[in-house]
Length: 364
Image 1 (cartoon, rainbow, N blue to C red):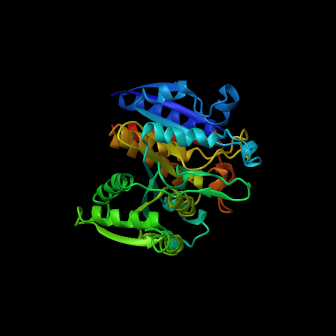
Image 2: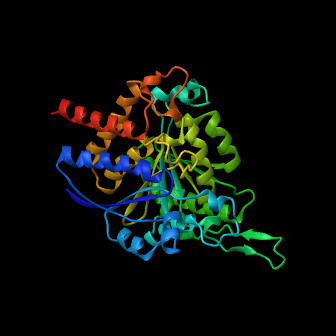
Image 3: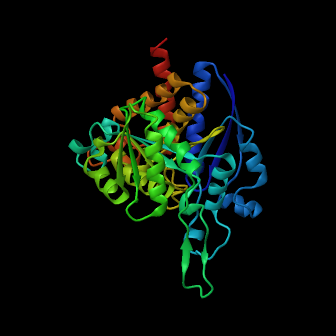
């Protein structure tokens, strides 16, 4: 198979973790006889510094002319500390999603048994959790009208959804549920918000087209509580942009660390794959960032965009084997971890590459 992949490192630790994700893709291509061509582009703070634009036209052109994108993260403390700045790294991310039609964010919350102790949640509550989030990505308050009134003391962000936006992601969620446990939990705030009432009505209509799939509705506050109280009760979770952003970060506690969670942003053409963590400038350059989320994002890329399920599963098994052998990065280590087995970013990437090679040789 011959495919073109754009590497979009972005800011902070995005550069460090995508380096390891790319190494894994290169290894898979070599082991399975594929040809992956790579290009690289800028986005976020780095792009602003270089061009004044968080998503340069040159970057967007490359993204529209590839088969898949491996992305790092955007963000910088400069903007967190000065909310008055008009041009911001996150604007590049939002524009990219809109321009590429990436309306569905898939976040699998997969718990590796070896990391049961890494979470603050009791192992007996966590064990067996397997959730797939479908977060709508191009509507809601992030894209609604926003501003401040003349006196500057009143701000507003409009939460807005159109029927077609709910329909298209609902179909994807129900279709995915058919490959899992045939259950969709739709999360909204329909007791208060008019946009949520539309959301619920449309999801109910779409649900009737999938009579074999159980549909339940939960309010966002109840779902947030239940996610920690009984995560095994969820299968596919369908929700809007804002609620999905919050819930999936909360769900990182199920996996033990944000450094373990991959995601895919897809539409009807190119797909974008990224860890759910941010740019983490507090650890940038220290070599301690966990690359496993980026590596697992590479596995999602192979599976969803290229249909290479065996190759994707080989990566997941390599990660499982590394964890089973006791190796950790600092964010997922605990008091029982052998200090000699706490690896830096590059060493963990190298370990996964080694496990890939061993795995393929064993299966030949």
